[in-house]
Image (cartoon, rainbow, N blue to C red):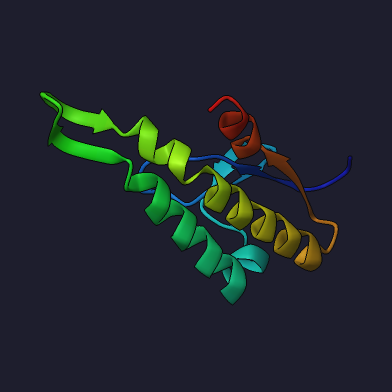
Length: 109
């Protein structure tokens, strides 16, 4: 593909699922995506959900990841992901391609 940007969809603590890359590597944002209200809302909801799995000073650990809660939320996370990908495809002007790494992660649960 001749797209200028790649949007990787990945989960990470305190970061939304949208990671934008150009030929040089990770960049802060892509205005086409950053300025879309629907995408911003979905991005925040998914980031908040994923970050909530991290528990501090829990289970005799400084930071513990609640895998059971993540499994419980799997249908909701995949529903949000589907909405996010749909919206990204709606606004895509041909300048980016999408690489979904979240589905791969959740298929393993």
